[in-house]
Amino acid sequence: MSSVEGAVRAARRAVVFTGAGISQESGIGTFRGPGGLWERFRPEEVATPEAFAARPELVARWYAERFAAMRAAVPNPGHRAIASWEALFPSLVVVTQNIDRLHQRAGSRDVLELHGTLWVSRCARCRREVATESLPPAEPPPARCDCGGMFRPGVVWFGEALPLDVFARAEAEVAAADLFVAVGTSATVWPAAGLIELAAASGALLVEVNRDETPMSRLAALTRRGAAGEELPRLGEEWGRWRSPS
Image 1 (cartoon, helix red, strand yellow):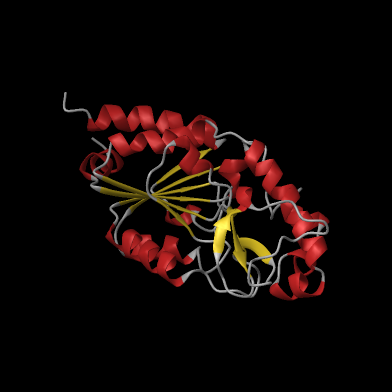
Image 2 (spheres, rainbow, N blue to C red):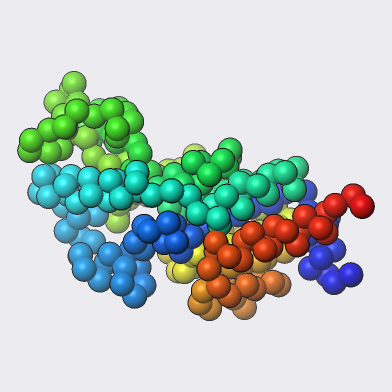
């Protein structure tokens, strides 16, 4: 039995850390990397509080297009494989940088959204949160709250801090994990990428599933190069055999 197989057999607490690469297979464009949205749009024009204050209609329309794409997308085999792993491990938490909620729609029950989600909108004045789908159409956008404030996307923009409670729980789960699987993440977006180093320092078995090499690759005990929708179901089948009582 290899050391990797032994660690997976013994694992009790698993954390799956996901980035845009897994949702790309559902037709959702990435923000970074070749062909990403930030090659065509400047973040400071559509993804900062200052941009929203200066040009709320432009920002609202841009995110409305992103939300329409996310609402039309469906979970792919990678999302579904991760959800199925809840049957393999006593504890499995998904920590995601994605804002599309495809993990939840695939059936994952414990998902920490480090960068928020487009499925929620928040009043920029009173901070009341509502389901984006419940907002009435507004011309010009954005929709207005009862307090008179403008509803903005419930995501973390450049220059904003991650939600403290979500990140604190993510750190606690990673520190306690004995298996840490990173999927489709460039491992370069901080502070989220720091969770990888925390997992390594805490003694977890590190597994990387990605098309390309990343800064995490040197730390991973097991690396699978390829599409998440292909590699994650294969891992699940293999791990299911390893953890079978027979």
